[in-house]
Amino acid sequence: MLKRLLLGAVLAVLPAACSAMSGEVHDRDVVNLINELRSAKHFWLYFITRTEDYSLTSDQIKAQSSIRIYRECGANCANTLDVVVQHLREAKPIVCISGPGMENVLLELSSGEQVVYSHVGRQVKLNDHCYLSDSSINKVLDRTDYIFK
Image 1 (cartoon, helix red, strand yellow):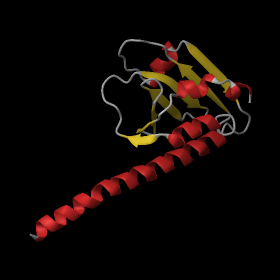
Image 2 (cartoon, rainbow, N blue to C red):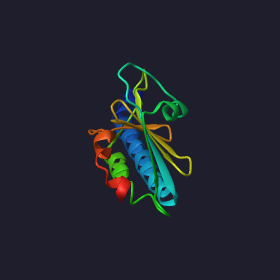
Image 3 (cartoon, rainbow, N blue to C red):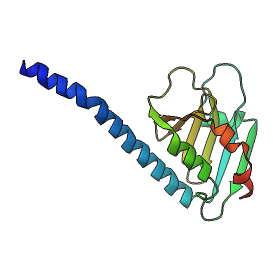
């Protein structure tokens, strides 16, 4: 009887604990990205356009990208890429989607930090953690403000 009671208590608390842990990791990834952007001097954006199922490494994304944008930001890219931070902030922590990666955007900072977007730009992968956004990073980056800011 006591074992069942304890097991029930653990099962009741576990989802909330996992959710809180995911929230803490998410917050930490947002803060780390902001800090990386603040110290970055420039960034690269690589865009892939494909229709079939595929999985690419960061190096393959760079080599096979159809659009490449290089932007110098002086001493701080955080202001320039505030839309990227907001996109991550609004995304929800998830278990990375399995199967073909379908990577379509790579953001690489001068520090070497990389953010990979996949599944039509809705999945964000940063520090081996995945997040799902309601909006595509492609829509966010359709505006050219970040280029001319």
